[in-house]
Image (cartoon, rainbow, N blue to C red; front, side, top):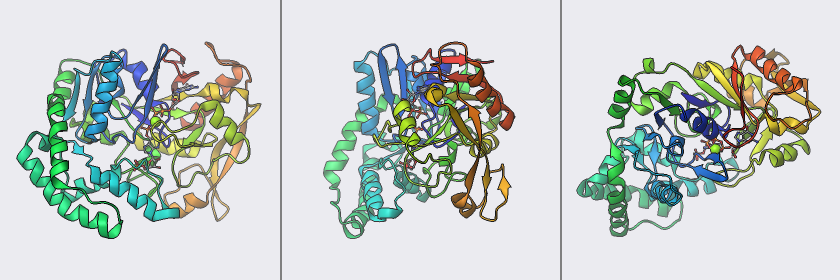
Length: 415
Ligand code: GDP
Ligand code: IMO
Ligand code: MG
């Protein structure tokens, strides 16, 4: 299982693509097209949002029950991959996954606008409203797409409420039943061949001794329960949810690889203790190409936060870490690493504060590590190795992979 250990965009796509080479099945278990995973193979760059990264490596790819699916985005991605010679014949979509409907996108956009300064900074892809309807038991599932009568009825029931909401509360255009139903029926015809009993598929793969990778989207601190609520996504991103999201038992997961950047980024609003002050932030952003894959927004950049990373190790039961983008730090003479937080009352802690106000007001206590100031290629220079070992010692977890560039082969395996 591969999980993001920070606020997303840790480089999960690259690590999953790498580990997929030796695996048989790759599954997404939560989230939807809010994800943006970049995979670089040779001269080709793929940016995938909805389909598991394993598709690039030609592996069986599963979108599990815990995911939300935008049919248009899914099919656009299918077309894009097929047109570039990547087959989607082995992509399987759970009938239990929920469908992001156009009103979810409209409500996400309108609600963010309405929140103004208080906005979450969502990707505006309808994620929150879709998961909310799922919890309300008003959702439309992938399997509903396969039954035109049920689909039309569900759209009608939903629109009766959503249109009032859209018009009266948000003052935006309502949706028209006939046009929408016709459009979804068309999309459904193309979705049909991908729909499968994915829980059974993964169970059978495991029984047959196949290697299965579970690919997390977003990151630990965006988890709905344990993240920096309300500045989080609307699904549970942590490792324990992977079993639920795919439909297998937790005893089937034997290793949890956390993916963390050698620094930290965050897109969207919310507290961020190690956010870099001054011009170094822009420097890291430029060097790391830190612009959102989905929205193109500037990512906020910070120094590595070991308090937050320790929390991610705890929440996910991380058994080893992949530390990505170490190359981005190569130009800095000194590298601050946050080892503790100083709280409002003047005390210091190595543990992530359980209370939001403590976290909001926490200030980082840094220990400075020496930089290496040479490009990373192959064997790590002593100072870079020292940085890695400093992190390992602080967390009590081994770092098995170090990223030294965006391409698939730019990685150093330490163990
Ligand atoms: P994900 O959402 O976790 O899959 O991450 P994204 O793909 O959104 O963002 C990570 C970015 O960093 C992508 O542009 C990757 O190509 C790039 N990347 C991944 N690993 C490395 C690395 O080790 N070094 C550098 N320089 N770039 C990397
Ligand atoms: P990957 O898989 C980084 C953030 C948004 C926002 C919050 C809620 O590429 O790591 P949402 O649209 O989910 O309701 O937005 O979560 N967010 C991400 N940030 N990487 C992602 O995905 C993200 N998916 C959502 O910026 O702050
Ligand atoms: Mg991303």
